[in-house]
Structures are given as structure tokens and as C-alpha cells.
Image (tube, rainbow over all chains, first blue to last red; front, side, top):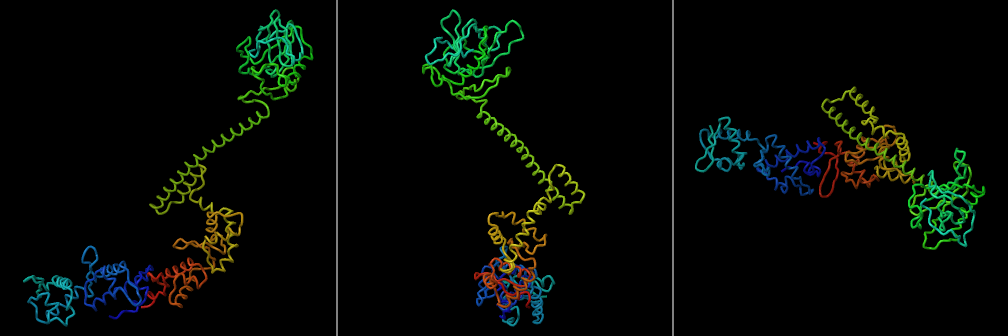
Length: 172
Length: 411
């Protein structure tokens, strides 16, 4: 993971009172968070545990961002559709370093390329199957796949279905 | 008349006879007919003894009862030209031996001398009164009440213009003296107290009026504020009308009361004084001095005539409007400082930002040491530099540190 210069700048881990500075600070944090999640291919974040992750804690300079700051970044991401709280307590979040629509497109393109239209495949096959190891969405959080498929549903390009206790999707 | 008592007409060895007069009548007060007549009056150094002809016992009036002797002007009638003496008497003593009359409404008796009296008699009598032999050589047994202590006063008769000097006033215990030096003093005191009471009573009313006026002023202020909020601007006419109402009640315009108070001559002079006194010192310590420190220095210099904090504050608040070289500045955090008017924020920000860049980062303590000023002022400098976006903060358990604002400036 390539950390930007701000990561090593101590004030970066203090929420700035000066409005203009704070705006820039938040925008830098957004990029870091999304890049980090893209890099680790993870999609969930628990605020209570996040402070120990290298994302928000730089051990070299011994600085970490406060929970207040983390929450602020997440809410900011939510506004741009890049994050979503999984519960009312706002402790667990989904991070979309690609939006669901983007994922949906990727899925549909893969399905078309493989000639999987009009056939069904399980979600498991999509994220952990042997056919998809090279795909970006390999290892993606199920929640995100589902949301991606939902966007396709809107466009009538796919449909979620249940069969044999598994969740599956049919591409049209 | 009730001061008379039954007594022995025989004179005591210590008693001196002053006069013996025949055909004396005694009248009670202004009575037209005499209570006793046809008697012989013996005036002694101690008492007046009256023996009615034909009786063996007598009546006596102790001289200490005699307050005032007055010669009565003979009445207009031709035939009763007997000389009369008016004897004004003091209150009867408690425990006085019984007399012919138990109660008398009058405080004086009249003696009528059909055969007249020697012209020297009144003088002799007053002399005896003055001598007060009954005090030094009492003729009564100790069972009888002793004569009360006397106060000597010079007396003038009202009608005859004869002066009987130094008639004595017995001072009875427990009784307020109406005359005499002590009495006059007491009168003056009473007068003072009365004036005091009336003044404080008058001011009480004033206090009540003031408190009521205060309520009214507050009420009117709140109303004018409400109007302002709703309409955005209270029109000039209304304001003027408002103020004139209050003026007609004799109340100063409340809106500008504070302003006019602080513009008073005293505060202006004070402001000038403070400014000239502290100007050099402020320059020495870097152009800025906290108000408490300034207050201490000013009072130290003044010595005895110390300033109150309110006066200091008011004076400092008007320094700017007076164009003095030293002015008051209030930071966002509430800290008040006196600084040179030439001193401006832009300079501070610039120098502080440069200092931070040079050293990489600064805490308030470090900066205070470098610049030679108090930590409080150094912190204020850093804060206003941050506010201007020329510094950013790093808040951690290690403390509060300020860095050049790369977050904003660098991409």
C-alpha cells in the first residue's frame, strides 16, 4: 500500500478546526480509505476496531485518528455513495471503493463475455469460483455483489434467485 | 398645694429664720378663694412654715420644692392691693409626708400678704434657696426622703422683670430634664435623629421609584429588541419617541447609558494615563500584555489611589476610540490584552508562520521561550495563525503542536 505524504504528517491525524484545511484533510482521507480498501479487497469496516488498523494508525509517528474523525470520514463517504452503515449504531460499515453500479457493469460484462446470459450461477461461484480468480470482483464481499446485482435488476439485466439454499443470479 | 406637709412649727436648731410675716393667705394655683387664711408665715433656710392662728400645728413647704418665685402684679381692682407671691413648685417627691391636700392640679401656690412684706424678703428668700442649707445641714430624719440633687439655673420673672438669680431645679430621678445644658443637648440630638429619619424615609421612596424604573427600563429594552428582531430595524422615529418618553419620566436613555457612562471624563483621563504609563513596558515585552498583568502594574505604580477592575476595563475599552497608542484586544478565547495599536494581526500571523516553518513545528511553551513572552500570549499567536490557515494543529497525548499548514498548501 502506497501511503501518501499526509500519512506521515502528524497533523493529518488531528481533525482540523480551520474549515478550509479540514475540507482538504477530509478529501485526502477519503482517497486513502478507498485506496486501502481497494488494496486489501476488503469491504467492511467496524469503527470500534478501525483505530488499530494501519489505515487509521500510523505506528511510525505514533498517531491515530480519533473515532470522531473516522465517523466523519465515513459519513462523508456515505454522501458520495462510497459507504453505507450496516446497522443503526453506525458501528459497521460497507465500503464501496467501486460503486454498486460499477460492480454491476463489471459482472454483466463478465457474464456476457463468458456467454453466461440466460443461465444461472451462484454468488459463490462469482466471488470464489475458479472462473473468476482474475476478476476484480473476486473475493468481494457478498453484500456488495448483492447490491451490484440489484442495480442490474433495475436495468432488467439480471435477477437474484434462490436455489438449493444458495443465492444465485440469472443474467439476461 | 399637695407639696405642703404637716409639720412642727418649732424651728430646728440648724434652721435659720429669714422672715416672719403675718396675715398670710395661701391660694391653690389661681383659685379665687384662699385655702388657708389668717396665718403666720415663717420663712427659714429650709422651709416655709405656715401656722394658722389658733392652731398649734403647722404646715410647711420645703424650700427644695420651690422652683421659681414670682411677684404677682397687683390686679386692677383697687381694694385688694395685698402683695402676692407666686411660688412655682416642682413635683412632689414619692414618700412625702402627708399634708392637708392630697392632690393638687396646680404646680404653684399663691401667697397673699395682707400686711405686705419687706422689699428685701424675696431677695432673702432666693438667697436661702441658693444657699441650699437643707443639703448641707438637713433637719429631717433619715426616714424622710432627702431632697433631690439640684441643678442651678438663672431665672427671670416674666411679669415683673425681677431677676431671682440661681434658682435651683431639682433633678428627679427617672425624669427627663426639659431645661439645662443636658436638656438642650438632648433636644439637639432629638432634632438630628428626626432629620435623619425623615431623610432616610424620603430616600426610601426614591429607592422604590428607582427599582420600579429599572423594571420599566428592562421591559422597554426587551420590547425594543423584539421589535428589532421582527422588523429588522426599529425606525428612528419610534426610537426617538421611545427615548423621549423615558426622558419625560426623568430616566436617562437606557440604550446609551452604558456608552455615556464609560465615556465619562474620568475614564477618558484614566485611559490616557494607563496608555502612557504602559506603552514602553508593552513594547519591551513584545507588544502585548495581558490585562491582569497590566492592571497589576498600573496599581503598583499608582501606590495608594488604586483602580478598581471595572474602571480599568472601562478605561481600556475606550482607548481605541480615543486613538491612543495602546489599545485593548479581546481574543476569541476571551483573553483580554493591551497591545500597541501599531501592532497588527497580519504581522503576527506572518512572523509566527515563518517561525513555525523554520523550526518545523512549535508548541506554545517552546514558542513562549523563543519569543520571550508568556505561554498564554504565545498560544494566542499560534491560534490566530491557525485561524488564518497558516498553521495546522497536531493534538495528541504528547501535547498540542503546530505545524506549517501543508494540509492546505501542499497537494
